[in-house]
Each structure stands twice: as structure tokens, then as C-alpha cells.
Image 1: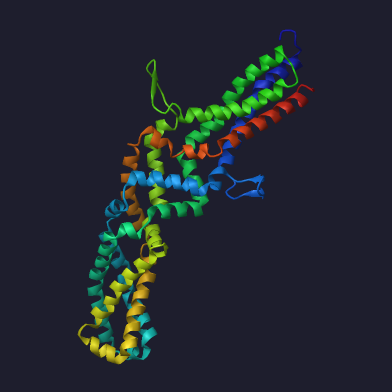
Image 2 (image 1 turned 30 degrees about the horizontal axis):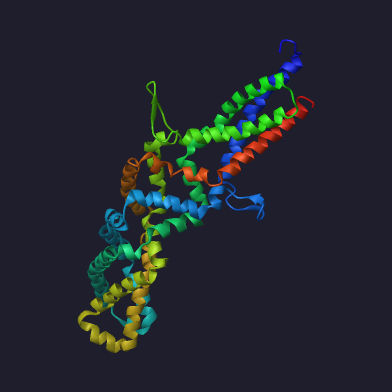
Length: 405
């Protein structure tokens, strides 16, 4: 190099700089292509791209489900921790102020003349009677639900459907869980690229064949991705060399990641609101609706009490039956809105999060890596090859524009 001109020296010194830039760009692009775009852009099937995670959303969601349920245990155990009787108390608290309006709505729909002609004293007695009967009925309903919870609530289906339909949330889980690892992948491209670039510079000086720069560009784009991925997940188990511990970067963060992952799952997916919605709209919804109707028809019977014969004679058998049906259908409608309270959802989520977090910290490294590894394993070769192609193009550009070949 001592016989080179200043221009030639700068040209050679640009090689590791360009290699570092190529390493950074290809790694940055690899991470972005893993998650974006959320929907396919281009002309199917070959001309276009969709992020690997959103493209495989259902499979990725299934892996997340398996991780979540493996740490949380059975549906019955989760229901026990959420405390369905506490939920019953919350439901009564929410519905109580609305008893008058719901009762008037039902009565006016079935027999407006009768209701409008009832003295306010009698109406108040009806409201008071409903308030006395409602807690027992709601608690009995929750007891029945708790006893049959495993056949009423399919948590795996619920979580998988929720994440499949919300690709943005699925992507966010991976990005937040592996935030430090993705930054490492991107930034390591600079250092690995520069190191490869130094070797490339020496080889180019000793053997300046036209294909050297494109070949090394391909190797830089390919190898920086490959090495970074290996360092994240390998070695799986801790290895001590001269007193220094070596283990995959992601695996070293098990304690920290457990908190992040469990918080997202319990506060945004495995919520009371979502579980109630699944029971009311899922494949077992007919059974759940039937249980609600059965219990809330009793509200009408219990409220009518000793005057049931008078009420039936006034409304007629059909009218009285319709009133019970109307009350039951209203109860089904209300059930879906009763647990929308963010504070109550958050309070119950904290309970489940603590359990999930503690159990995740006890996972083996092999079990733990499955939280993030699938994002890379799915079509990983495409990302590595794409990095290699981009690196080769950069090498060609370097050959033409810097060395004028």
C-alpha cells in the first residue's frame, strides 16, 4: 500500500466502510422484512412481499398460545385465580344503577298500559325485589359457569383468533419481547461488516479480480445476518470459559422478557373482556346464552312472587312468557357490556400476570427460546439470501463507482 496514491488509499479504505454500511443496511432490512408490511404488497404469488410474521400469523399465534397456556395451566386454574365470584360482585355493582331503566324498557315493550298505570309505590317495590333477588341469581350463574368453564371457554382458540385478526399486536409482541435482540442484529451489522471489509480490502489489494468485490459484498450481507442470529440463540445452555459465561443473548434475558411478555398477554389478550366475549360469541355460545336465560327468567318469577297469578292473568300466559324471554335476552345483551371496565380488567390482569411471569422464569432455555425463535425460523433463508443479494449489488456498485472498473 506504500506505493499507492492518496486517491487509491482512500479507495481501499472505503472498502471496510462500505462493508460496514452494507452490514447495517442488510441487517436493518432483514428485521423490517420479518415484520412488515402487515399485508401483502405486490402481485401474488411471486412479485411482492408480506412480513414473515404476519404472513404466518396463525402459526405464529399458535406458538404464542402454546407458550402462554403452558405457563398458565388449565382454564379452571385461570378462572380460579380471576375469581368468578368477584366477577359476580362486579357485575351486580355495574347493573344495579340500571335496574330501573332495564325494567321499564322490558315492561313497556310487553305491556305499556299496565306499566304506565302502576302506582310508583308498586314500581319501587318491583325494583327493590329485583335488587334483592339479583345477587343470588348472578352468583349462582357464576358458580355454574365455573363448574363448566373448561367446556365453555376455549382459550387456545380465543388467543389464536385474537392474534391472527390483530397482526399489529402479534408483531408488537415479537418486537417488544425481542427489542434488544433486534437492535443487536442491526447494529452488529456495522461491526461484522467492517471486519469482513478489512479482509476484503486485503484480498482486493493482493488479488484485484473484478469478482472479488461483488463476492465479498454477498458474503458480508449473508454472513452478518447469519452470525447475528446465531449469537442471539446460541449457545442454548450457559457455557463457562475461563470464568466467563457465554449464552445466547436472548436466553440471558429470561427474567426481563418474562415481565414484558406476560404483561402484554394478560393485559391485551387474556383479559376478562375477551374471555367473556369468547364465551358469548364462540362455538359454545349457545350453551352460555342458555345458562344466562335460564337464570334470568327466574328474576321475573321471583319478582312476581305471590302476585304471579295476578301478573299472569293481567299479561296472559303468552305475555308473561314473553316478559321472561325479554328479560333473559336483555341479560345476554348486558353480559357482553358488564366487563368493559378498564380498571377491573387491569386489576384481574395483574393477578394472572404475576402467575405467568413467575412460571415463565422457570422455563428451560429450550422452552424459553420458542417465544422468539419462531420469528426467525420461518423462512429465515429468504432474509439471509436477500441480505446476500443486496450485499452483492453494493459490491458491484463499489466496483463501478469507486474503482471505475
